[in-house]
Image (tube, rainbow over all chains, first blue to last red; front, side):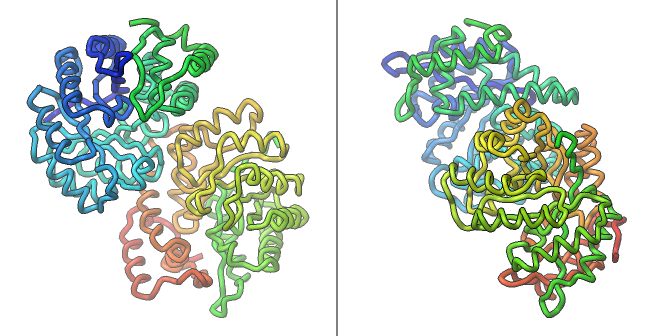
Length: 304
Length: 304
């Protein structure tokens, strides 16, 4: 059940044609770009990949493409969270059938489930498949629903394939609560953050993150991770501050802003599905000005 | 103000007699305990010192007493928060006249004013004094009213003595943005963690720290602070986890828990004032047992 989760792992956006239909050929280019620019793993579709705006059939088609195009160069995990838990189960079984290396799943949406319900949900998911499962904790987006340290301990004790967490609270207390509980029981457990907040998490046992900005500035992402692991804190601070500015630029209207930024970087991926807006030309011009000011146009790859 | 460096700031509780009066005899002993056990400065009466449950006369007397007791050995910071802007500004003026080295204030109690009025609140407190002025960001305690980096930058323009933010939000996104954006307009600006989660804050670039836990575990708190201050962040993880475990134990009962723990450590400072509820004897017994079994407290001082 080993899967190597380390470094800044990329979660591709989902390219769409102008009529908002799936653009699989461009998706293949995005995947290839991430692998070539040093991503140690691929995970799709995070919320950044508009997961909840895709049908289950579309998600399966893209997942199949991801596994096929990456072709074992790095591990591929599939994000299976859906509004209906039955769909999540179906996507998890599908991920296993197509040869994915693992799955990722957030605490259930909308219903404000109790801790017992979250426990039962992960038990059901983890015992339905033979793949490593990464949990996803995002209390600020899910009305405070979260995995506690105690729940984390119970899940690790019970489930051998419960191997990591995408911890997206961005909060010192919550990160330590989970890392203390998890690493005491399973030293190989992967403590990952949601966005590239590596500077505050690596000293506490964090081994990496998923990525918001990797389709814009993969070099900066990888340099920050290297600086943190080397304990070069003065350098890591400068890189984290820079990446924070980029995150604040894209956090506004995420992920349509990110798709707008990809146009600037010569990697257009089409519009964003409603109810999310699509980045207007004015918005793109603003993003271009900001990226130029940050020196990103000179230090990061342009085009595919 | 460029050389205004606070270091590790202890935030003492306020001792009460059985009759519920401020116990100045014990307060004197408590201040001496903090000074002997690693305090670079004192801030009082913070929420750990039940500031909100003290009358105006008591708050004045407490600050005057502490400054006299300390006799210039370390800086004494006065906590001047209140609901009304004018009242808080008056506390600040009193503190400066009494010889406080700096003042610290939260967002207003009870009200949730719009950002422009939060700015006004702080600007007027800052303008009331010539000594440095810190803002305490504690959204969870303060009905969700948040300080943003944007607001802090505007406050810099209004208040030349605005020296830093004491952060209890523990929010990485906020802390990184604040440190990054504040350093150009005000290079000496300080971020100080307001709770003893110092590793992430230190990684981000915090200087100094506020600690109420130092009343219970002054040794681990000091070690944690020194390791973080010297950028030995990986080494700091162990003691950070010990301190986090202690914080979790005490968190449930809040200030009453802190006072219960003080009693268990042989430094009885009396009970909390209403409307807080003191922990009962049964709960005290359980807490004492838990603390007695904690390795982190094994070599910590008992008694005064």
